[in-house]
Length: 339
Ligand code: SF4
Image 1 (tube, protein in one colour):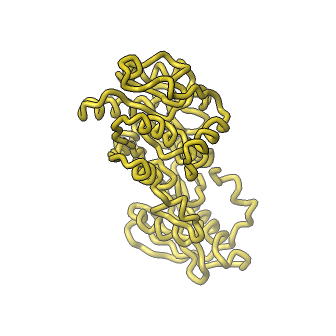
Image 2 (cartoon, helix red, strand yellow; image 1 turned 120 degrees about the vertical axis):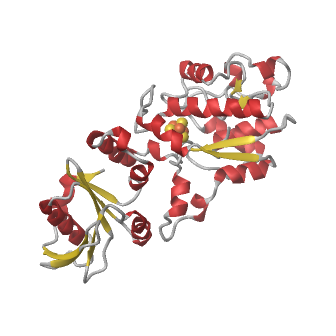
Image 3 (cartoon, helix red, strand yellow; image 1 turned 90 degrees about the horizontal axis):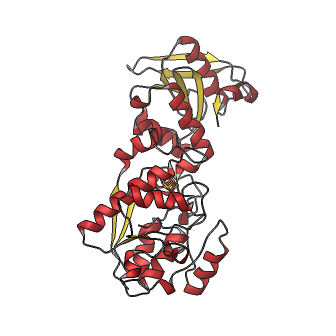
């Protein structure tokens, strides 16, 4: 099971170099930073950030790759994690259990002998402690058949090691948060290009993203929250204007273009006489909040220094009106901003 990061690169090389036939599997949760960057690419983005690291890795090692989209069923893991969240909105333990369970099913489907991952004992505060690794192995039904090549010599021998399919002596004893042992091994194996840092490709570990998602959980019935709501949390600046009213302001042209796809059911605001963001207002839209939204829209357009700015407001039913408003000062919008 590979993610495309350094740890899975190393684990993969350790197993492939033993002459073992490997099929890579990757589970797409819908929260990959690289996937989102491919949809909304700001000008000047380093092209390396847009690469599909999983595909690059599988190709480099010459192995087949199966990518499985689990984004629809993943929503419940995110909303109702049995083992809670990590530092942000990352339900890592539940996430690993779900992926490992699916990896087990795939292992059985293709009659493979075992599953392996790039996990390192003690590397992540919650999901890679010894008792958590054991829990994940147990809950996924992979007992004895889940190998962690980077820490294998610190863990009990797995069935493939006992059966001689894998040479345990050629595996590692890495533990803890330092990346130095992995970097040294990468240099020794001639692996030069890899994604950094490990786990950095998941939106759910991003503190700003977490603020927006927890705000949604606080203000909406969880069962009503959709994948679209969570996608929008990745885009623009967000403002909580009322218990049931939220505003999303595009930050650059590509985000404005992206937001165009989400206007249905939302009120749109845009400056009439100046270059500025596309702004979406969602939830209960009282007139007082429309005016506040218009003043925020004015604050982020090129006319923000003007005394009055004309803002076009298009309602979900297509009705259009124009409000002439005074742009807010930056300090006036701080209290509503989610970050
Ligand atoms: S960092 Fe993201 S993808 Fe990785 S285990 Fe945690 S929630 Fe899952």
